[in-house]
Length: 383
Ligand SMILES: Cc1cc2nc3c(=O)[nH]c(=O)nc-3n(C[C@H](O)[C@H](O)[C@H](O)COP(=O)(O)OP(=O)(O)OC[C@H]3O[C@@H](n4cnc5c(N)ncnc54)[C@H](O)[C@@H]3O)c2cc1C
Image 1: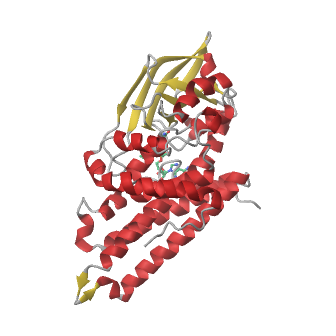
Image 2: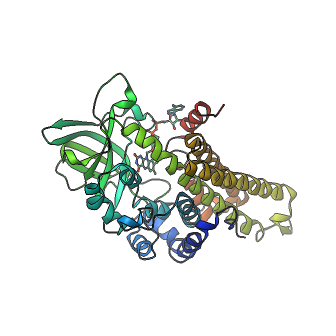
Image 3: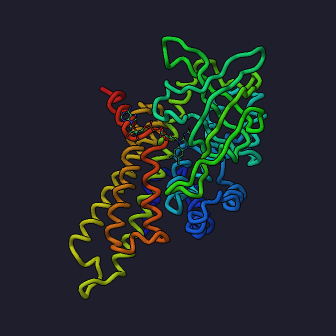
């Protein structure tokens, strides 16, 4: 069964999709169970992904990458996440946040920080969420205060992918206290070896075990004033634009996970016997599989349609939020049905279906919880 068909992937993204497919089958799928169980950062797979030219290559060619389009990034997301969500996230987080630097940074910043990511010499990450809130972007408490020719960062960040592993992070911090709460935030390049930066891994998760998130404490963490990205006070708006792209990639996470659940359930019911026949012969089981497939195709079509809208700048916030909600919730529903169809074996922790079941809990949360996405869909509905 091949669920990640070439259509609806546009022609321009098909070659990269094939590269990602072959890489995922050779390096991600065979290692998924082991990395999930050990909960280790998949350095070897990450390095293989770099050698294959599939990591951090959304960076433009000018700065050492392959200039992957949104469609190419989405095609890769689907393939990686079908093979394994934890390893898939690690492969995709290597350049997380650099799109903002690419679009808003100075030449000097790009030479010093973007090029090494595109050339796979540095890892990065994006630090927005905090211990007290992840959803309220205009309520974050970490501050950056100007002191001479430096910015001084104080506060905490939580859930930050690559907080321990990265060479530098894009950090979202409060730089003023004005009435317009959306104009109070700015973004900074923060090298992780700066004095006053401390990060440790957060406790082990139920899913995505091969990706690592951290708790960061900034204590009088000083970076040069030249590390401000773009304009002071524009951080919230740069982030909102960045999330429109990110949520399409997360749509791909949902599609990939849903595909994994359907494949696994399909194979199981065609093999398992009950009452003298294979389980797939029961009509109610066929209906479950029919519903899973229908929802999968609906979600995948929406995600690819949304990718076109985001790429062309046509109501990007509205389309990106719909894609994220539909795909991640389809993955969750397909995993739930897939578990039921596995009977008792569903709860064996080494089964792929139970790994997928645990993983699907996570994309409905990250890049903005789905409740907040629904707020965006309503508020940004074109009328
Ligand atoms: C595996 C993983 C990786 C992550 N990686 C990163 C990363 O690299 N960088 C980063 O900055 N963050 C990252 N995050 C953090 C993630 O973005 C936040 O967890 C998410 O935004 C939710 O924030 P929260 O956990 O603080 O939940 P809260 O904001 O406390 O929300 C809790 C719940 O309250 C409800 N709720 C909250 N607000 C509303 C609302 N407006 N309307 C209706 N209901 C609401 C929802 O049910 C929500 O689930 C990651 C999280 C996970 C789990």
